[in-house]
Length: 323
Image 1 (tube, rainbow, N blue to C red):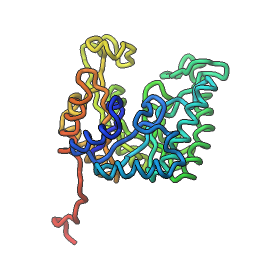
Image 2: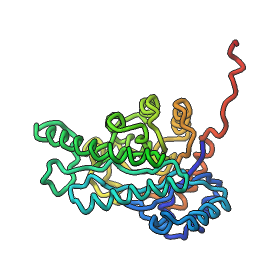
Image 3: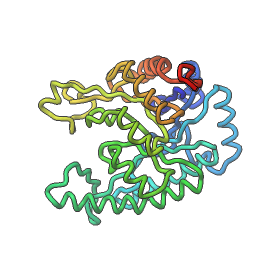
């Protein structure tokens, strides 16, 4: 396994400066945003797609710093009820898949997207309960739309030999492991998870159990290293479906935290060990979204902790087992 970083928090720096900084921390891999919510400051797709010279320069720059690209990131909503917004997100995703194939990057990270609750809706509708009955009907409509779209998209990804790694995220149709496998089973093996435990903690989903569940289906294509801390005092009165603004930290039920600040080192070693058990040997890509510390401090603390947790070598045959 490798320690990686999603470079988005370093978007104010040039890519060269960001890569130099990450290399100085001993990072192995970088995840580059190329559209959607992550932005494209470090990899504008239009400048690299179908351009062998630009792609060669990127490879040389990565080699110079001893880094590789774990994934291209383009998180948006290709199922948006606004057709223009959905089309833009779809174009971003397909271009990212094409570019990943050309760069020999095996994975594109993204969201499942979220439709409206009916064909004439104009706003996405995140449904979290099956009653009243119109909500169950809306959810059925959403899954029909999603399966139709993702069946075609997964076929497209397979044709480019790229894995699409969906991040299970609130306000998206796929926000937990059962939904992820439902979509995978309806499409193909090139669709799987960008496993980000930060969105699971506040739902009371055990990341280790979720890794085992998804790993049994070989459905983990990429991993984000991001933590979450729950604040029991606020949970007791607000619950966890918390719409309090993220920058109102004292009032929120939970906050995204730097690795180790929501769950300790021993927990992260359990996460890493579970990933080893299910056969995952890629990068743990640190995603910094901790509003209580700067990007630099958050990244450096996360890298330091993860480097003590990741399993870098393969085990030998157990000598203590009788042959």
